[in-house]
Image (cartoon, rainbow, N blue to C red):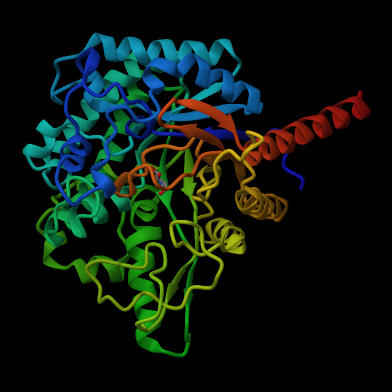
Length: 464
Ligand code: IFM
């Protein structure tokens, strides 16, 4: 596998999924606290109160990151740690925590990449309508300004919003994620307000700190249609592609929404888009973050079909769970590494203005834990990562402008509605003891990075 010489390897996490330290040091209540406390929402009624206790154990976790040999670490800021009730009243202990984290990363030679919003909105803001209410745009922009003022002296690369599709459609459409609303109009409003929030925040951040680079982390997929001669299925693909792959990308790069999908949203969208909004939305990305896990299969559903990832599109007819091939990960998501290559090549072709792509998440859930000898033999994850990294390398060789890859995730963590039973880490976490054990996939990733660096050094030496 050959990567560009300046290619960066990283690992990714998010605040609510790993930090724990729920309500100490002044952290306010987030929508995920509320959602997790609602019976029937999260498996086994688990929550992020303790999680991986990263809030207290971050120095050891940074040691682990160092041991893996990665160049960069992507984490998110917990909004309710910095502003417990949204609004403007700061909690200094929250700022201090991220100061310590960033300083420790830099001291160890690891470049921080900060995500502003990875789903833990202060509950008070949701009580005012959350992403479905227009006021969230200015609230988010104020939060982005405060974070920039505090951390941009040390953090250059920022993701504004992680997976706005999930925020929108899982949070407000299907309700399987916090805040758990099931309201298509609210979801369509959220689709617009997340796009506006990215644009408004980006402009404000760059005014204060012109050197910052901002991007969105979009969960993107390659759609496979069961029968391409079926007009209905192909039309459905266009709608779903517009809803998931193109919505935020066309919005930020070109200041417009995909025509067919916007038309399908109809008056629900027209009612929330005010004059001048699309100028706010239009805010070209410095880099595109791609979170890729799986292809999606569009076909006529049969009772025996397993639902494919992101297969449930809203508000379109539920005809999207086509036959997904085996094998699957523990999430039931098909393993389709070539889809990542195809996606990257599509981005190169369809959005030539995107000049920098980072794979901000890629990984797989498998349950393996330590065996009798203490090691974690997670060969399926080793294979998953290797095959997807191969696709990244191939796409880079074929001219896709990819500069970085972040494995999801540094360590096992709170997998949202699935609680702790789905493990994505390349480091195993024993939640009873908080012991961390690097899995074989972590060692394989470390070795791949070391080989890459060695081959770059050899090249430099041979040129000297
Ligand atoms: O754990 C999540 C992450 O928070 C967002 N992207 C997908 C991951 C796996 O489901």
